[in-house]
View 1 (cartoon, rainbow over the protein chains, first blue to last red):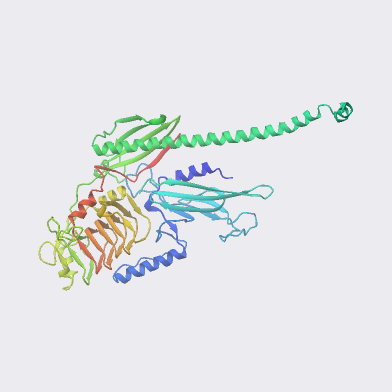
View 2 (cartoon, each protein chain N blue to C red):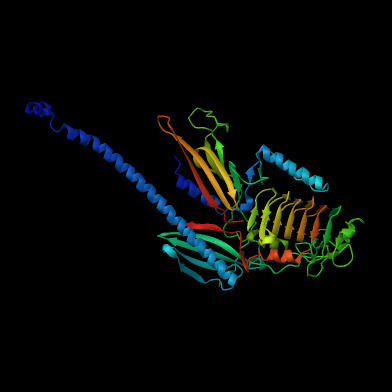
Length: 177
Length: 366
């Protein structure tokens, strides 16, 4: 089982220096539909306006609404000695669940191992990837002001195939705008 | 009775077997209890360590706050060591370095100690119960007050302006309740170089010109000063009290001038304010701005190429559009009023002499 205090510490280390304004989420179909409506209204108000590109499902976007129960997040953080420049930020970093190969996010135990929609909570920093936790059945990110609430549901089975589940919640105050 | 007692007693060959059985049961039980206790002690120790580290970080944060407080009072001396003991055994040590005089090209632009390195780097080490954490932050000086020109200030020579219907852009000072304000009139619209007044005039049709009022006859046009929007944007971004992370706000309240609640708000991309959204203070939009049935009291700095206001939207204060290569400025049934009352309120939200830059990061953890 992933040691939750350690996971909390790693998430804090990654997210605390994040710029709140840099938060992005993966676009859902509902996001795309809503952004299309926003853009249509804008162009109707000003036919001379420069059209904004409409994202595709899965693109990292500024969501049309609040960041609530999102399964992944992208952000940038402040970098060391040149941080006096607000534009000097880290490469985009991501934290999201990557499903195990035989699983799809459908609420069903597709690979019949007792775990549902499990995968790896995976982080990336630029081209570098790393695992934060294994056997993650669900993850969600919710932003309240500058506090990012992270909820991770973990599962593990013993030798008798008994499944033990736990959900861990952690709040991180994002330090930079 | 005596006979039955004899019958119930153990046979000599079984004497002591219960004790053996009990010991046989007790030993594994003791082993399990010991293991459980060991696990609990281990977890408790880990938890205590986490708490210690978190308290050390809190102490370090206090050091940053003290440096910012001193900077605002003008008593922060670069190079000075600040130490303080806090409650519950926590403490911090703060060192400060002026990047303006450290002889280093801190922003890697090939220049050493130039004007934009007028920043103080604060390093705070917080300690608690044998643990320590160290964080860095940067404090930057606020720029001088900037004259913003007209009620709407554009920054381009390539202008596409549409002012439709009952729309109005006025440089006449107007209070938040719509009554005339006490301040002097300013131009309704202005343009900063490289834009020129002929550029501005040429982009207004004959029907639009009477809708730009203010200082002088309509159309009331003026030349705005060169605004250091990069510095202004940096300050607003760094000191923002609300970061707008959504692309659209509907029926939202982002500050309220009526209750003297002015905020500094920042959006890093395109922004739509609609359906009764109200805001007050300073708003920086690093993208296009679209307002539909929305009102803002104070200053808006929009760095995208497009500004659209429609459906009874209004700005009391000023709007400044950044240089983007082309400016599309479109008003349909919307109004922009110069308001010294709203501007005074908005700038009251800016902190003292220094703001903390977007540079907070942890240096080390022991």
